[in-house]
Length: 359
Image (tube, rainbow, N blue to C red):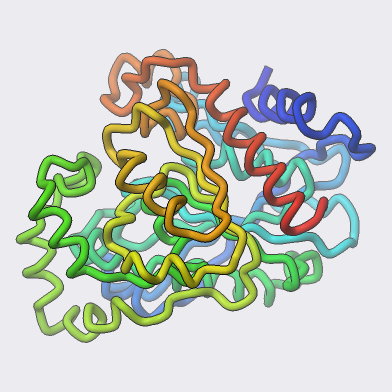
């Protein structure tokens, strides 16, 4: 049984027993958007952002595997989607913008996004320039995390302008979701204000916090980041870190194990009136719940917080195969991942159905 069917079936049993509409096949379409700040972050200084759109496809669409790794020996079980399949119908649907984690990719989180698409949402995801698993990573891509919100914004504009995708997007119903640094971007999209000085002070006081250490996917020290941000080519962008990076029209935010929460101005959380739901793993040693997702949930009015016992940070990536568990550090996971994925999807579908309406 493929992972997406397993997840959709489990979530359907938990949440959607009363829904008349069955899960649809998933379509996938690739687009390209332009963001001027991408050129600062990309190793080749390209201003482009890769966009992947997943959506409910017409019955009979032929899906192909999205699994990551060598053919026949994947490292991650991801799911399936049908390239450029026809839409299930002509109705406009709520759209979810999705941001991946530090050094990740849109595809790595397709265990989450394809199930949302199966359940009727249009999901617009990106590969963040200079900080994704397909391209060379850069210090600028690691440091300019506030610019990643702009990637989501231009991706939405590009999807809306696309003659195939655009007619199916309801711009009155926009949600944002993200994992880890992507969860940071989701909170920024709702209006949280970046404050690099607050993060520096936090790390001076708590240097052993997981967010204050170089991240294993692409280790960058605080000194390296500071030097890069002070350089002439990045200084002007760095000076705009505290600007308003919110995305107009966003009416729901779902953050999975959000990271770098101490890089926000704590006072800005109180002004967020967008519904926010946060899911964290109680055993997360990378983005510790108390100083990241939990801290945001305590400060944001009416935010919902779900804590999953025993769950670590990388439990939220796509399901590791036996090959992945044997060869990858991030796949050394104590608990089975599928139950964790189901809990996250259960929370996301309930939240987005309530805030954006059932698709």
